[in-house]
Image (cartoon, rainbow, N blue to C red; front, top):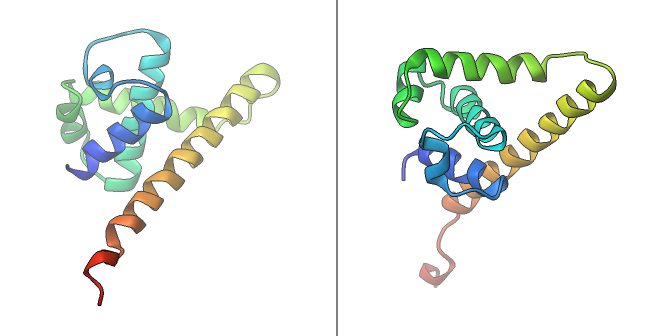
Amino acid sequence: MSDADQIIETVAAHHGLAKMLLTNTGRLQHIVLARQTAMYLIRKRLKLSFQQIGLAFNRDHTTALHHTTRITSILNSNWQGEAGEIAELLRQQIAAIERELDAQRSRACEPNSSMQT
């Protein structure tokens, strides 16, 4: 599994969705938010080009650019009231997903305990 696929799978699992829903054309709000989050994390963590990100989701590079820009804008916002609460919730969700990705990476780097003597 590629690093991008791992991020897509982890984001989908965090949102209680099947991985294929993030790469399909669904436009339901909760699916779109999960897709945007996955694109943002792929760009942030893997530094892939927008074209590469778009290909991973069967989308155009401009869609990947729009989605990552939108999430970045929300995360950097200083909104008040309900919008601020939504932005803070998104920050917390992304932090939780990143912790899970880091834990997955740590587990993958650990030597297999059954191979030790």
